[in-house]
Image 1: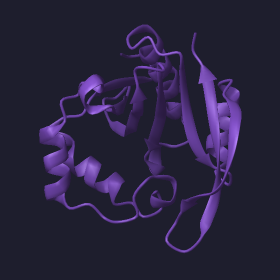
Image 2 (image 1 turned 180 degrees about the horizontal axis):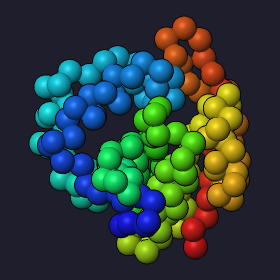
Image 3 (image 1 turned 45 degrees about the vertical axis):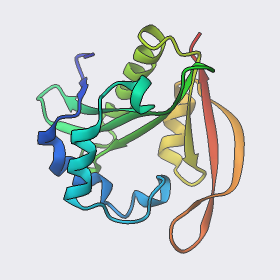
Image 4 (image 1 turned 30 degrees about the horizontal axis):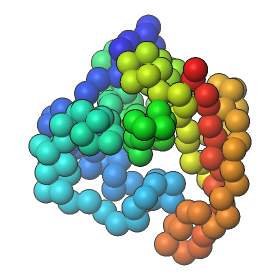
Length: 170
């Protein structure tokens, strides 16, 4: 899956350092499902045990590379629900590569994959209400707010509201 701007590829064992860096970035813990650091051992085990089969793992994690083959982030389809033809989209673009169009291209490529390969009906993202950059990105890509979740995300100190933004693919 590639465009002139990005390529999405399967995660490889060589991506351990990238995964370690992203998963242990405490600034991202408020938007994810964890708030503890992961050891290299745990992440290595994840990489060795994942089948990269969304039907088995109920998720697929892809590496985002730019046109110079530099890794700029990670993209996920998770909470895969084949019965109801939907999945949650997760996306992290590393700080130094933000605001360059990579997130937009990654979302568009994930939508294409979700529709044409997985035959999903919809994908959605859970976004903190104060993450204006992400909200703006998903609005521009025609995602609609379908729910306001009160006190949904805990950053270790306080709770934050989140919005579910949903996009019907077909």
